[in-house]
Length: 272
Ligand SMILES: Cc1cc2nc3c(=O)[nH]c(=O)nc-3n(C[C@H](O)[C@H](O)[C@H](O)COP(=O)(O)OP(=O)(O)OC[C@H]3O[C@@H](n4cnc5c(N)ncnc54)[C@H](O)[C@@H]3O)c2cc1C
Image (cartoon, rainbow, N blue to C red; front, side):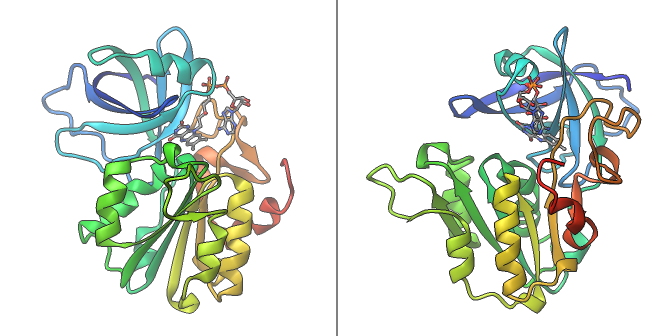
C-alpha cells in the first residue's frame, strides 16, 4: 500500500486533455529490480495531496525501470497528474491485476480491438507482437476514435500501418480524413476472419465492446477466445475495499482483463 516516489522524466500531449508520462524512480535502490509487469496490468498513480487513480501501463517494461502511462484528464486526480511537469514527483503503487493472456495468442490470429483511450492498455500487446514476442500467426488492429484529432500515438500508428494489418475508423471525419467514418464494428464486420483460429483482445467503452463481441461471435470466434478489459471506480486496488466489485468479481484483483465466457452474465446487466 506504500507508494514509491517516481519522477516525470518525459511528458507528451497526445491531444488536448490526454497525455503520456514517462516515469523514473526518484531514488532507485541499487539492489532492487526494476518493476516487472504484464501488458494489461495497471498502477495506482498518486498525485500528492489529491489522491490516486488506476492507470494502465501503456508501454513495455524496460531494464531501466521506466514506466509509461497514458492518461485522460477527467477529474481531480487525473487533472493534477496533467499539471505535473518534467522533473516533478508522484507516487506509484503496483503493478496490480491480471493482464492480457499472451499465451492464448500462440498459433492464432490476434484481433486487437480498441476504442478511444482503450488503445493505451493494448499498446504493450502491439509492441509484443511487433517485437516477435508473440508466437501468433498475425496481429490485426481495429481502432476506433471519435475524430482524427483524437487518435493516440499518431506517429506510431503510421508505422504500425506498415507492419501489421490496421483498420482505423473515426466517428466524425474532418474533411481531410481519408479513412473510414463510422463505428469500428463496420470494418470488423467487413473483415475476413478465421474465427476458430482467432483470439480477440478488446478495450474501450462498454457499449463498443458489447457490439464488437456480437460481431466476433457471429464470425465464429469462440466466447472462450474473447478477452476484454473492464473499468470501474477503484480505491485500494488489492480487493479489500469493494469499490470495484462487479458481480462476484473485484475488477482490481480478478481483472481488469476477463475472458468473455466467464463474465458474460455480468456484462449483460447494464449499469452493474
Ligand atoms: C483498471 C483500470 C485501468 C485504467 N486505466 C486508465 C488509463 O490507462 N488511462 C486513463 O486515463 N484512465 C484509466 N482508468 C480510469 C481512471 O482510473 C479514472 O479516469 C480516474 O481514476 C478518474 O479519477 P479522477 O479523480 O481524475 O476523476 P473523478 O473525479 O474520480 O472522476 C471523474 C469522472 O469519471 C468517472 N470515473 C472515475 N473512475 C472511473 C472508472 N474507473 N471507470 C469509469 N468511470 C470512472 C467518475 O464517476 C466521474 O464521473 C483506468 C481505470 C481502471 C479501473
